[in-house]
Length: 263
Length: 262
Image 1 (cartoon, rainbow over the protein chains, first blue to last red):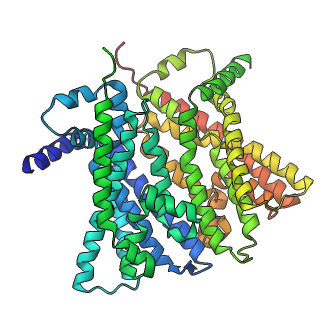
Image 2: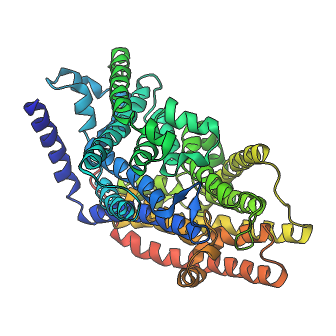
Image 3: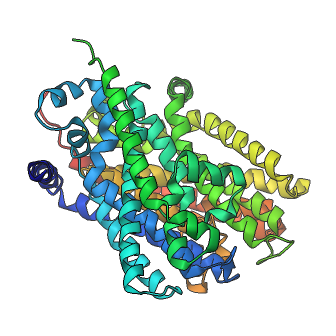
């Protein structure tokens, strides 16, 4: 286990050093990612200035939901950006090299790139999360703090697992871009807002089919004590376990189909 | 002129060859649209009216914004950026066409698919959510005129952001920064009248509102006659000004080209 983590860190570190060669790009990427999160909240602010509630959710409560997605995407980019390079690796036959190295293929793929933009997402997302939580009505008992941490970790795991599982679709659909991964990722943007604003079909799709709502909406509903949604949100850790198993299954099934890229 | 027509035709066909990429590039915009429709749907529910927008007008406004957003969205800048970064731009420089006009011709060639797909999405939204109020014939003519200006204007913004690649190695960050600035100041997702006054003033002196807010406001009937004409004039003034500015930037940028080995 320690060896696994150490190698993962070293692998990411190598990519970090490579990325830092271009200092201007580093700042542009982080700045742009941060700005993207801020502008999203500016939009929300402009809308909420007219009407203070969205289906019973206050501005700051929606900001918490929004921030959860920002942080989850940030963590995905910063530590697991390689997931998004899988399609190209398959397309170019580069998975061959991964197969002969004594390290899990999944982890080699996931650590094969670093997305510095994730820093912008995480920083702004954390600030928004802090502000939102401070201005929302959450009772912080010791139990709730622990629950909050468990929910946050589970939410991050779900997001990363969904990325891995959907990107594994590239084993079936050839091409240099991750069609399934990218397409489904965009659906996840819907989970930046309380999902009660959507039609029932959309709600089911993002809570059951691809459980993006468990990255943001449901965990937040638990802490805010939102009745039915809150009780469902207690399932978040179980959903995380399910997503990891499903992603691993999809990845391994795909890997068995892999047959290189010719000569 | 014939050279540029050929370029446009080539691009129009190449879009069809890479339709999957094209559809995917529209996905991000589409889900942004769906989320905003859902939010506004709740906010403007039960016949509420905010800043002169009821649910029908807001849907029309967002859909026009979506169409404007879809124009010049399919990676003209990424193509440029890629060629600048790997040095292929040197080949472009040897061709007997004007670089800026050639890129514009390609964008025009690609525009019909962007427009067609965006309209298809609009039709789907209208089918699901009911019809929207339609402007009268004079306003519709003004709207069409205003929409025509969006294409070169958006091209110029995209083109100039692509030129930044002469100065940086990574284009993605620049691309994102542009998307954000445009989405904020163009008022495509949230009408500018909902913003604080200082932001509205800022948006009024920047070219981005001409890329989406002007045609959208004409369509929903918040801009009429003289006022609409004045803002359309502003759009075309921006087209000319940015065209010249892009030329200036290009002249400086090509002095930075370093081509490695051969």
